[in-house]
Image (cartoon, rainbow, N blue to C red; front, side):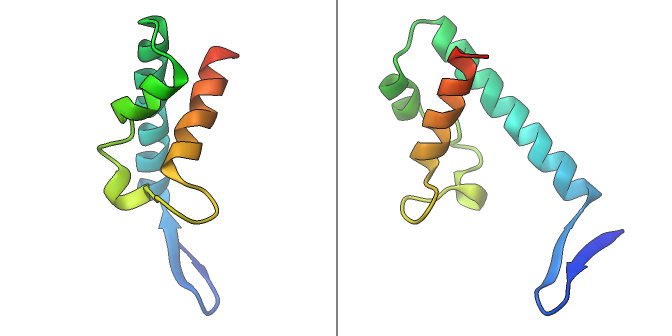
Length: 80
């Protein structure tokens, strides 16, 4: 099954959603391990926990950057 929006083409299918979920879990686990090792938020950002996914999902500018995503995930990991 493929989900489409009129005029916009293919959005995603079940495999895309599973891949995205797995990516979020991997990044969360990486960040949590870094926090448990005593790294600061800046150190977590610099360590690049999203590096494997930056090519597809990363952004250095615009509304939502990779840095903002990592900072948000770090905050979520610190305060579950």
